[in-house]
Image (cartoon, rainbow, N blue to C red; front, side, top):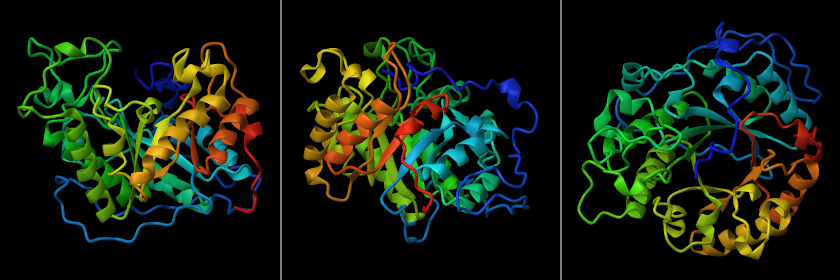
Length: 394
């Protein structure tokens, strides 16, 4: 099951961004109704040199940045939205006038890198899309006390396999394999794949992101996976051990560079005892992250799951059960915290508005979980804003 298979891609087309994609228009105030500092035009200096070498680069241990008081309460933001002269200010204003305090911004998604990273491999394969000016965006987020999280989709990557098929998952005939949605996947057994994703993460930290969030940190699950070939796979290697090893490696590098580390997993990982064939074995994943972000969207649970006829109609009940299972199983990893992705979109004709989001909040908070992230692929949160409390004193 793909995270984006259920979501319509961001509503803005690339043509809308054809002019000035790399520059965020910052013109005085964004009209934010809060006590936060307004945005003013400013020249922004480049933040150091980006990572151009492999992830083996040595970093001195840095203290981790403070998490917002009360925990992270964030929204998903595409790279295109972060670079849009009207869309991004509107999202900043939303955070200003509500209890929200964070943004999860795409840095790498489906192989496309969102900003101008100074990385040799990114440049070689033409992955840079220059959707937003990272330094200007960081200035805005800092002025508005918005906690920045960089989302990196790791293994689902269609661009890198085109230039380096040796780093990809293969079909039985030796060609690069594509899933049902025509996406290629990187080979988790290839350590160069590990370094590539970690290098992108380290560059994001250098530019001011305070947390790295890995998505698609798993093996593929769509299409005829039984025919897949993983070049270089060691004899007897387990997928769950490979994913755990990759996350441990990334965590050490990211923490040494002064960043928090989180990972997205399917909501059902807290219920099943195995890795569902994708390498996400719950008890191993939680040993290697600071924050676990299960995607507990009610619309994504099958009818009858947890003995609920239609989970999409029962957001409170399905979240209480799923997150309850996750919390119980996390007892063995006291350093890992739960920060679930909640449903802020409508699917299968079941409208999701303030009532449905409030039901999800209620379930999480009854379990002592006060942090959350809201997912909407269009980055439109107007329909659920009524569930977000006002917090002008942030």
